[in-house]
Image (spheres, rainbow, N blue to C red):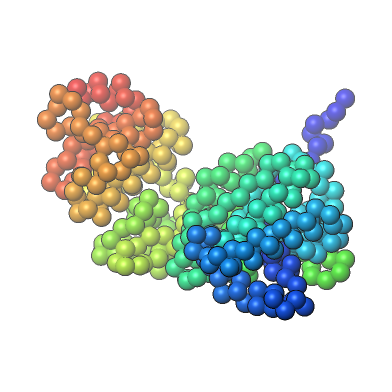
Length: 386
């Protein structure tokens, strides 16, 4: 009889993707290829749509060469050609059969070269029987500017919270950071301390060995951010005006200010993700332009599921964030497709917005403040108001 408890835990493997797999295919002894490296370097931060046609042809040629090298190469040749696959082969001790049931995510920059390299690695792994291989490209992630890079990292952290965090109870999360750019690698190393069970590197050189860094017992002291929880929750929902006096008190390392608007920095997003479940399951936060009727407070206190409490407070944070941007004009709420803000029929002033498909909040605008009245199922809320 098989003892399933002795089976190794399945993994979710997250590999950062660089572009050396492409550039290694350039034949620098060929006169017509001597400028290919500089052409790729100068266009490294361009998306496919913005890449010049001559560079697209170079990328396509190198992609074909790299794919053929992986297809016909020995394991040592493959590991030498691709830093990313060097890490994956090292993880499975050169036996990819071990990884057929695992989930792989390839994290690439939002560039033609990053996307192409990820596609090569994806195709190779699938050809080896590792079918569940996906590519995630954080929108805008590149080294074109500090702003683009930090925005991409913030999107990556949000994606991690939604797509990787739920796996942690049943899967071992492994960050393969052998490939990618040093700037991305540095951030992923820190992010991995919160989301990964282990981080792997490969020592450079012939017969290189794998280095595994286990997850450290890192925790965030929520007391550091608790005084700023209202505005952190609002910035998690979107940009808020930098002119808000209380928002200016948030520690500068947690926020990113651009064009008179503030949002969470990558570290702010990372820290907020670690603390929000605890903070958003306590008392209702006192958001600007939001007032809670006693009936609403009672409905909140009757919630038994903490996940439901978090979702409700996140939705209220979104409403507060939008009202802060519009200086209390509720039209901005109607423009948000997720909230589906509208007025109840047969009422003069009672509106409602959606929390989930089945849960609603009824409300009434008084001046520039939204008074929240009831929360619950559509039948519960409508039954109180209509």
